[in-house]
Length: 220
Length: 88
Image (tube, rainbow over all chains, first blue to last red; front, top):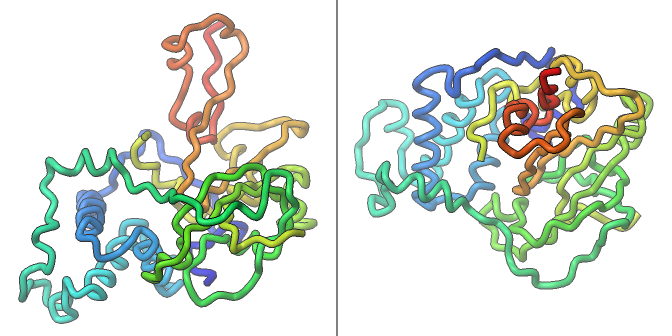
């Protein structure tokens, strides 16, 4: 689906406003939301893709009027309720009525640096050879899909050239919905600005490269 | 690796404009690239992460890593700035 996060090429958001010496957080609650999101993720109820999809599934009017960490918090509440860690009543009252379901997965502050350092690799052993190779001309699919995707709207249906193959990865479009699916090859694909933006291109020969999973691509 | 990105990097104006008008966005950061410089925007749409290596400034031939590192700014490693020029 094309969600409210899919902003590439859209107009009306104004100019970029760099701040001199910007703080890492603009309020103490932002740091707390980041910490909460990381620790709640460690409960293991959902994947990175499901949490991303939860944010991107917020109603566009809500998403676009919320600040970055506001979006994170709203999506986190939805995820905790979906997975039975918090009830609607607890959300409304702000008071816990039952213990968490996965107290054994509770992180202590000392565990965090190691977990962050380890990260969450998404590369997987391939189950078949790649269908595309650098130099191939490819077209992105343009299907309207109801679920999660990492294909930006501006590149749908566009023709580009594979510039690199990045290995085989967890397929977010399935993973976001808790569906187990074969890992997919990932390719860096370059698109000329004139292909993406037509007459409106700033400089026709400039390029945008996206990372595209194989199911997005067909030979062009 | 570099910590949390600045707010503008995650903001709708940057996300909307960086792919469609990278030259205008760079100009907002005070960087104007010549027409003949080809721009390739890397839109990180999966979990692959890119490390930006700033272009080596002219006049730094023979400098060691430590001296070069002093010319590197945060924005140069985000891709919205060039490395600093060496003192003449």
